[in-house]
Figure 1 (cartoon, rainbow, N blue to C red):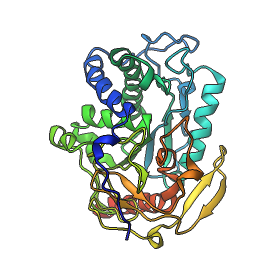
Figure 2: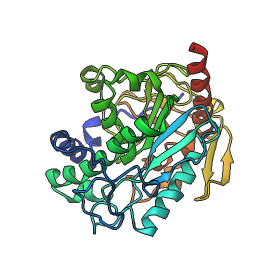
Figure 3: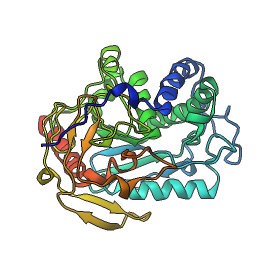
Figure 4: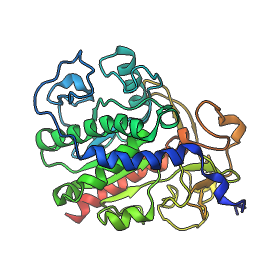
Length: 346
């Protein structure tokens, strides 16, 4: 069994997490001030007051030319933008656009066997803005990203979805924006009826969210529907991650439960690494165990933190960038299982 360190969890609250929750207060305020632009934007204009026109295919990183699957994915990419000038990503910049494509290719192989992928370009905030900027300024920049996703999603539902069930997928900044979308828009029953699940990993959701937004339900099994899958992966003896807040809700992707039952490596169907074209470069079956800690982290013992430490991206022992990689085949199987469950209920 995994032995978990009982170090006081109050030491684990990174500056990043405190900043995020300070910023979120302001996002709620600014979100009420903005609306979708229904016209056609100038693609060379990075004016943050101009809403992106999602009727233009140029503003989609993935927009299927033909529909070949019965289920869609609406995807919000994680943080790929690191420059502070401009502080919101210019989605007309060719390097930025390619960075999005590369990340999407690396992540979407998990979903593409079963779904049509819809992925809007959005003007995400640069990575260090969470730490560098005053909360109010950062919230304004994040709200630009949020409003882009809201407008893209509404355009997708009104013009592209055609009644198909869908899955929300995001990680890190993309997941955080999708969680806000769930909070603010999914009281709409027509959305909930068509949502198979939301895979929003690498961000924290608190129990208060399920109280304040009762339509947000955390997965309790491998086949429940209309639920959120959320977790933050850390080494079992470490407590800091750029995305984790103590007390976050958590789903174990090896067991699909929210209790502290230990899942051994034998439950892991395979970790998968891919390149920027989506080609598998390495796959390791039974790669790691997993157990939900009392503080809400998904703790693993098998990976050596030395092998994954990048001081420019994560605290030591944080596996934020590997939330999907370590559990790739289990996630992929679960997508298929939930889709089957959705159609079985009909």
